[in-house]
Image (cartoon, rainbow, N blue to C red; front, side, top):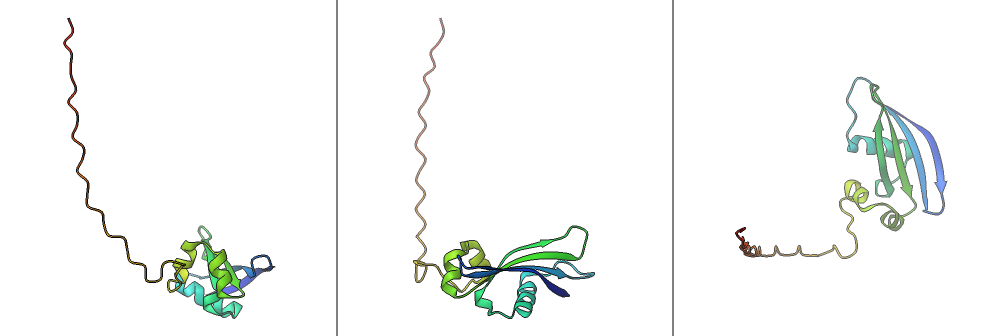
Length: 125
């Protein structure tokens, strides 16, 4: 498996570096997220808690793919700027505000269905 950085862009507004990386995996299926994260860490030389993989797009009919990754300057910026589902997918140990120690809401007792009113049918004369 080989990886190559196609582009690297500094985004000062969000406090991150944006990478577009090409990954080549001959004669195998598209690698899973863990393998891709390890490859991106290896090529970018960053800490895993500052890395966010935004997309993995395999090329149809080829053993290649394009990865979009963001590397943040600190963890607070990652939590502030990345969507919740991306954080949950790649950093399950990070909890948003209000989640720490939060108890799940108890299931509400099912309410009985309202009785149906009987329709009055008038006879036609």
